Length: 551
Image (cartoon, rainbow, N blue to C red; front, top):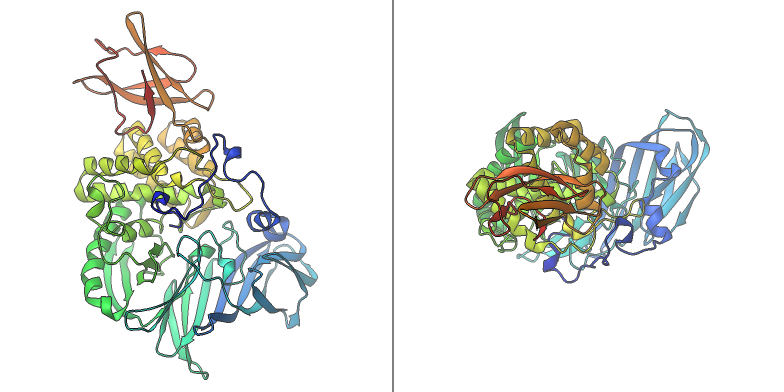
């Protein structure tokens, strides 16, 4: 969600122009980038199984204090490991088997020394105690951090949104997308009279001697770090349920009192058709055990797992706008649909390195078009997806730099969606396409993945080598260009691409006729064997294929 359609927000940093993947963004990276983005042996040596995060919130001082227990399995012998916590937060102590462990800090990385070698396969734990004033977001969710606000009644209203910035901006963790805990307990203490809503299911509420109230939320599924959230306010609750593919799914809604009546109409009207659409295309909602929640927040929205943040003002569109200019984008609430789409792509399937963030945003942006299709027909879905092309810059690649915590360009949203629609059209079998999308969520259920794994799976199940196609669209800013020319009495065509040996079918017809699939390559011009075809009457299906064309 962090970079939703960046053309609307000039405050975002635009990537520098370039063509090849190695030219995007900045050309050098800092030590902090590597400490955060690289999976060194000090991080790969252990696998996190469980976190118990305990946080006490002092709203008046904008101060947090607490601890996080790390339960882990050693993946090799080690006596030292790395965790992450922003250096504006103080580590009070680190406790292991009753001992206080020595540690060193370098920027936002923390290196812990153990008194003895922890052997490969050992299951063990340690606890980090910390405190401080976390970063406060200036314009969440784009810059990330804590949001301290007040509701219409003047009561405190506090949330977190840290995608991109990092979970370690407010709690100690192994801040790398490759490692998700299998489960997690989130215990947040807030001033009495307020509630905290986090991920998973509410396990208990306990009044504490200092006048605060602690809310314990248990997450029973793997969860990526940036999805972990707190939402503090004078919340009221109502609930519903949805009969889905794996049984009865609980739908829980947490809103401000002033919003209750609007929410009771607006949320179910969007959520139930959305669930039906997404389960049809992607397979069962991935977190039945943890349920589904929408939580009203003082910022626009975020895909927090099983606790989707919502701040779109109970209106259709994106802040009332149609991001496709097709007319279809104002018939549903963008934030509900887009952020929930991330439950499948981003939360169920999580990229292993943020350079592959297009897996989250491209597929989720494509889910918008599938939702439109499910409600208004296939042509409407195609028109919506094609309409989002106006948001694409094609100035830098979608794939970012690996191992330095650097995502690619904001084109990963609309361009990613149009790539997937192009491939669907190319496959020309909607039953198979649905099988591929559902198969992705089944094969990579609750797993972290790479672009290579996604492309390999889609190639195998489609029966088409999609590697050169994805490589052109993802690793280069240029679109494949269809070049058409007259050669004597023949019309010939080829692809112009950055990828050598590029090959892709395209739909071509004589005006008024039926489209035919023609497979072209970048190696040489080939004649188009369509009777009566001329440069004047040739039509290429650019509505469904996102390409350039010259003739």
